[in-house]
Image 1 (cartoon, helix red, strand yellow):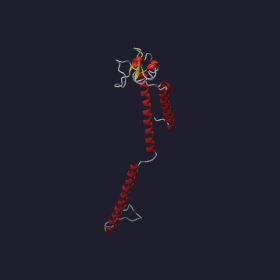
Image 2: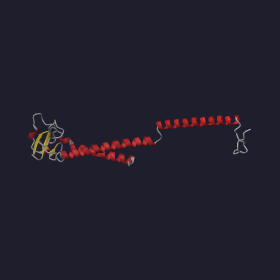
Image 3: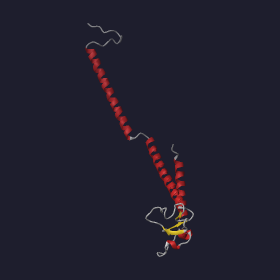
Image 4: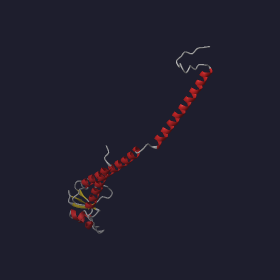
Length: 180
């Protein structure tokens, strides 16, 4: 059901590589600019001039740059639909960004859970745990005491049989006992 550890490492490495590529593609060092405090987002007239500013959001439906609503995690549909909104880069819409980040987050969480499960299963299968050892030791001690009691009981019963002459001949163990 679980894959091999080398395959898990390869999948984790691929997921990490994809996350790095996505981060690098979203942030272009030459274009990271902060607008002057007095420049409103509405002053930008194209997507390429609007999206490098973290506080601005470009909407292709209305072709205007608006201030990103910081009180909302996602821009409300009244401002711009997610499929038409651009933030950070012009070629990636908000909808695709959310789906991509959700898939990457899910892959990372799944790989962490699988790795933890593999590690836990490997530890359990490596040998019996302390509880099992303790229970087997107790079982052995109880069995040994029961055997000792059985031997003592048999010795007492044999002594009583000898005392009353109920022990049979050793030559004829199946002979009938006779009263004298």
